[in-house]
Image (cartoon, rainbow, N blue to C red; front, side):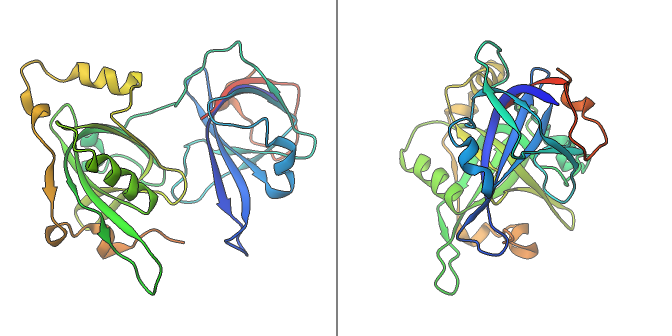
Length: 281
């Protein structure tokens, strides 16, 4: 089997037995239709692909396994995933234009009405209306921080969220800049958290990406879509104090330690010579 596409994202997962060692590299691949599939490279194959697999690169990938996928907080809704083997071949392909990030934004109202399957990580875009300072949540000598925030979409629906660790640092660094107005924020691959009647967002342990007022088409198009005469963006970000920023994550839990992609077959065997076009996010 052969696919052609772009690395939308490259994630490093710790080894199950030794968290100080990288056990797998997880890729999110996207094709020209925007379909996504996850791919796994185990640590004994890292050196084979270290110079060939990188975010934003378009590649032709051939000779790999296809396995059933499952579990919570999956980065794609595809029923299958790709697994690299010794014979997997990766070739450069620079003459195909594919989506750079592969965003698939989920409407706020659908999340708030619990119409979105929370098994999958989601992408959201909105205007940041409120944000807390960095809150120290360190325990037993292990440093950790969180930042609470609120996003508002074009329909004026609002959803709250929490980011932890390096993502909290990223939000804090932006806030320190003191830039006027409310930023447009994209959260890619975030978890939908449900507790009692509340719905909020939370970063995943490894996959999440945050884009804050980035000069990319999705952010620029969103700014253009804001209703003329709506001067809310000229307002500053409301401060969320640590006293009133208790989240459902605090109650529930913190982070726990070709062919088209939709035509991938129901098989665990090596198949060829089909061709797919994908992009590594």
